[in-house]
Amino acid sequence: MFYNDFLKVASITPKLKVGNPMYNVKEMLKLLKDTKSSVAVFPELSVTAYTCNDLFFHDDLLKDTDKAIAYFLKENTYEGIVTIGAPFSIEGILYNVAFVIQKDTILGIVPKFYLPNTNEYYEKRWFQSGFEVVEEVTEVMYLDQNIPFGHLVFKTPDEKVTFGIEICEDMWAPISPGNILALNGAKMILNLSASNDVLNKRAVRKRTIIEHSRRNSGAYVYSSAGVNESTSETVFSGHNVIGQNGELIIETEHFNQESEIIYADIDFGKIRFSRLKSSSYRDILHRYKFDYQTVMFKLQETREFDFEKKFDQTPFVPKQECLRQFEKVAALQENALIKRLKHIGSQSIIIGVSGGLDSTLALLIAVRAFDNLNKKRTSIIAVTMPGLHTSDHTLNNALNLMEALGVTIKNIDINDHVKDHFELIGHDGKTEDITYENTQARARTMILMNLANKHKGIVLGTGDLSELALGWCTYNGDQMSMYNVNMGIPKTLVRFMIENYAKHTFKGDVTKTLLSIVDTPITPELKSDQKTEDNIGKYEINDFLIHRLLRMGDSKERINFLLKKAFDLSDKEAKTYITNFFNRFYSQQFKRQASPDGPKILDISLSPRGDLRLPSDIDRN
Image 1 (cartoon, helix red, strand yellow):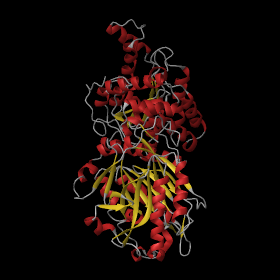
Image 2 (tube, one colour; image 1 turned 45 degrees about the vertical axis):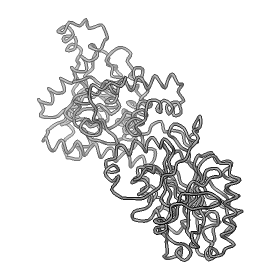
Image 3 (tube, rainbow, N blue to C red; image 1 turned 60 degrees about the vertical axis):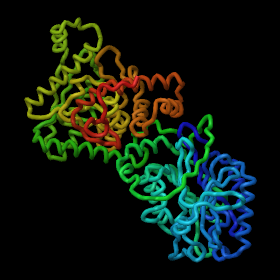
Image 4 (cartoon, rainbow, N blue to C red; image 1 turned 90 degrees about the vertical axis):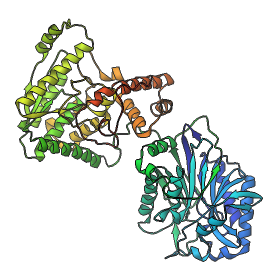
């Protein structure tokens, strides 16, 4: 299954019999008939089994291996790429190799380079390393086919899918063949392995695989031998692992007595984007001279793609170790603010508190910072400024929270001030246009700035990453502050943080008020019956769009495909979200260009001095 740069791969541990090649290939063929992937990886020496030991010296086993592979080629109906492992003789010397096969064609044969020969491993007793032979042999004749041999990079004609091969121990070397292949275009490494199990080895093996995928800015598909190998000296568990770009996608280790398959969806768009962005990857390209062959193959694109896992609708929100993740985000925000306060020598913080999510989170961080510095909370001057459309509900939430936290409260009604300003600029004060809204926002910011001067403090900004992405802020209004502690946090993560403050940090009235704030519809209350998500769409969807654009580099067409999958949207709904998002994202860059300092929290940010360097007059329409 291959569609829109997503490729489904399978890591398979077959039920096998030691020393019985025909039985083993028939089992593999049976599994392939129902395999829904476009790439399937079987373990090392899967045709014979890994644990044949001195049986590898016997001609009968080698002849049976040839017959079994010939049978496999004749009976194989699997349309995709499949890798199987077997012993292979060149001039009477045995090599432990991987066969890369498509239908009845062997696309290439890759030898194992690093042969373990310590402790329970004795591979040099039976096999020769591939290092020397690949210098002399680049093609072999086998079963009436001329086959590329040695260091191989497999590519589709458009190079969207490229991969290389490692065999077990190759992965553990200081500089592995897969590292070199990745630097020469392989976006995915397939590893045929027979890694036995002992106590604590699983964790080390998984870390190694995931780290390879990170260092190579690619994918890693690892298939290992299972419990049907000989247990004369050691046990194999069938520990299969698939990772991409430093993240685990799936693993299994069930000690399964039957055959077992795991699937994963490899995102080649993400791999391509990560390599474009990685200066370290680019710098090391062409540094290592390496003779390799390119093997071309075609991969049939499917009409649709069924994902193994439902897409995470809130990718910025932690799903595991939530309390630890909450504390880490809080610590980043808190210590960022502490450093700025120490540097400036600020005696106070001025913060506008609306009773909404963002200002609530900023106020909680200010309280944490002052507690850490042993400063009185009364030096935090929390200002609520009810305006023309402020509701009693949000005003009461703001006042209740400030009182419960023990900060200094200022309740400044801005109605008369705003009306005076309307009169000053010739606005009727009734037409609820952009001037009507922004006048209120700028009035509040001016008051905060002047209070900061008066109290020798700084204005703490509250706007979040989602609002910055969409330009949902007033230029030189709530867009501006002297330090913005929230600018690295998207709206969905803001909500997560406040929920966890309510559950784990505070009690009583504070918790009650925090939960009330979480349940309140998001609104700037700048005009009648205003709800933010009625204007810009659901924050969950907009944050998903930010995730796909900035983390994955997706095109509009690809995001359209994913929105329909992730949120069950119609094509029209998905296109509307995409059009609105991209129009706002690019047209509002000028607001981000003038954004104040603030800490990066996630692996992405919108800071014009950090992650995102865009011109303000970009035009993508």
